[in-house]
Structures are given as structure tokens and as C-alpha cells.
Amino acid sequence: MVTTRIQIKPHLKEYILGKYNQFLDQCVRFPDRLDIYHAIFNLTEKRPVNCPVDSGNLEIVLPHPHGSKHPETYNYLSRESQKKIEQKIERMFWSDLREFIETNRYKNSAGYIESVYAFMRKYGIYSISDDALIKHYYRWRKKVRNPGKRAYHSKKKSVL
Image 1: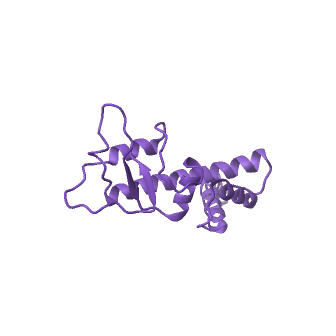
Image 2: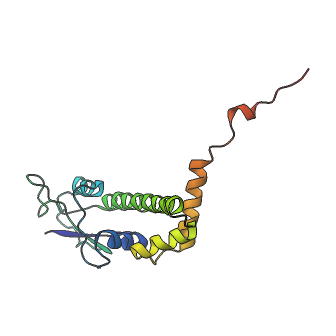
């Protein structure tokens, strides 16, 4: 088992540890059915000669599909690769939050604030405020659900 460390935002680390590692601060192994697993696999490359030791706040197990790149050789993630992985994790986080709120709201008749608190408790998230999560949800909802004026309201008829 070959691992590497990447630097991501603290709330994303808490989310990943809560979702895939039962809140343990150990190395995380992503299931091979997830896109993040394949993204990490595609982004690994041979370690440069004078490369420093990996540092970061999240330790992940490198993917090892049978008959392909061996993690003993391809065990380096560049800064750009780490940024792409962080963006992918962040998209997973926001998508999961929105789905959780919508499900809680319409199936369990819970309020938005209660849903956000339940989400934070479920994944052990403490490094981002509940207000930030609620505001993000409201911005997304406004963007998705409020497309703007309808075409038939924009033109006014002139009477002569």
C-alpha cells in the first residue's frame, strides 16, 4: 500500500474523513467505483529526481488497478494535480450538501438550517461555519431555480 499526502481545505478533509474513513485521521482509501479514484490514478506520475517529501493534511492511498501503472513508481502528484483533486473533492462536497438538504427538506420536512446542522454532524465538519454552507445553498438555489424574466413579459405593446 503506497500513500501520498495532499494539501486541501480543512472542511474538505473533515468531509472525506467522515465519509470514507469513519472519522479516523489515517490514510484514506477511495472506492474504485468513484470518479475521484480514477482522477487520482490518471494524475499520478513518476517522481522527479530532486522532489521533496510529500506534505499535506490528507493522506491518501494511491490507486493500483491490475496490470497498469504501479504506485511504487508512479507516486507523485504535482501542485496542479493536487489542485484538481481538491476541486473534485469540493464539487463532491457541495453536491452532497445540496442533495442532503433537498432530501431532508422534501422527504422529512426539515428546515434548511436543521438540514445543514445534520449534515455537519453526519460528517464531523467543524472548520467551516454553518452560515457559509447555508449561504452557498441559497446562492445555488437562486441561480438554479430563478431563471429570470420570461420572454413574454419583456416586450410591451405600444398602442397608437
